[in-house]
Length: 302
Ligand SMILES: NC(=O)c1ccc[n+]([C@@H]2O[C@H](COP(=O)([O-])OP(=O)(O)OC[C@H]3O[C@@H](n4cnc5c(N)ncnc54)[C@H](OP(=O)(O)O)[C@@H]3O)[C@@H](O)[C@H]2O)c1
Image 1: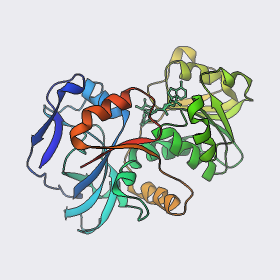
Image 2: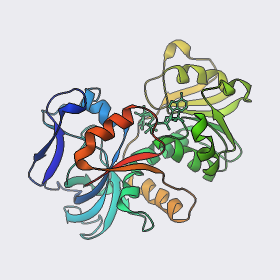
Image 3: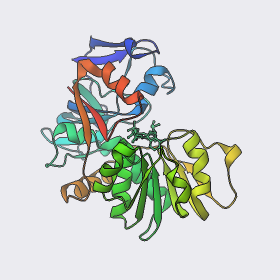
């Protein structure tokens, strides 16, 4: 099978297309013919060497798949022929390839309304948003601010927070404010204009940007509020007493993905795909993702 792998850490030029044997599912796993693979920032971070895998080169890439089950070692899992989508367990990526193995418990039925490309855009980003909202125990009526609301995680976080009854604020640059409002955001805030300074305190900040944005998020919370950060560990030097703050790291969850699929099917959550590229343009996809301006998701078609 064709696969995009890398044999040393570095820039996009280390990506290479190779022929590999089709993997065999271990007990509890299914073999999926990958039709599309979602692209996430962790993909190029792994390529640069920021994600320890403990495995020798060459290393595979990609954690989001949508495809068809073509083999199974999981009697309780999906059947051969089922269309599924799912997130592979971190830290070893293996989605940029024609076939991959994935734990049966990590996949869910592909929502019928979505193409494979749209479905591949969902798992890692939507599960991150879902698990961040779970970690914060979001209930109806709370004010939730999503920093980076137009990105992969952010655009799911704003919609899932709305679905849980929150009043949702989100930041983006000016060109994405209309997009945020279309997603149901109550207060769309331009991060390039310092407009956050006038916002009333919020109950929860989900930080999908990091760095300066994480540091500034502490001051936007009411006493007793919650800060969930995603890109990096908490900068303890800026911790404020009375704020519950933690980093959430996403993990595969087929059951949650099924519920997210129901929300997609019901029209409560929509999937934004900025661009679909063929697998042999994985390097371009990494370049675009690392630019930090993607609206919704990038997807590779296999
Ligand atoms: N902990 C975990 O498990 C986990 C899981 C998923 C992702 N992550 C991390 O979380 C981060 C976000 O992931 P992602 O997939 O959402 O990334 P992404 O899709 O690449 O995010 C791009 C978006 O970020 C927005 N943005 C950039 N700078 C901003 C700023 N200063 N304020 C507000 N928005 C800004 C951009 O909107 P504009 O162009 O409009 O500014 C763009 O739409 C990445 O660092 C990723 O590695 C962590």
